[in-house]
Length: 133
Image 1 (cartoon, one colour):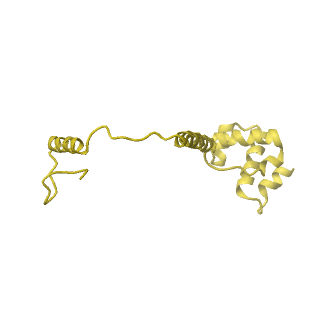
Image 2 (tube, helix red, strand yellow):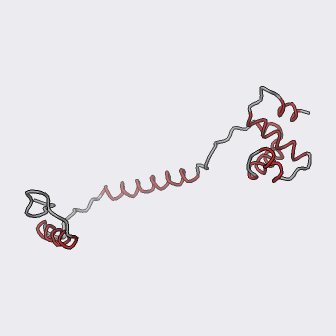
Image 3 (cartoon, helix red, strand yellow):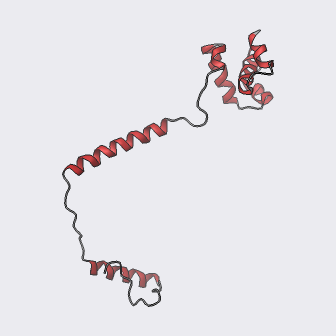
């Protein structure tokens, strides 16, 4: 049988041989849990390769697929970046002037009060913590 030849061949990639062994074990009537334990893999891997073999036959065992997590979150992030870019582009076309709501002196006074409340020491040679000159 072709699956046995694939599984036993010394030239077959280990991952392909594992997939063939999963299918052979399933054909022999072994449970998914028993196969996973025997082949030292996970139950979801056994289920996945049984399903893929049922859908695509031996060719499916040779399918190259990305490893690790799915790339769906990356695609969603890319869409969000593009949407945000269009939002920024729209607002850059008609920019609104920016104005401070408080004076620099008022901001410096607030920082001084905060520093005093937190008991933060000033640096050497500093009589006051200035954010704005």
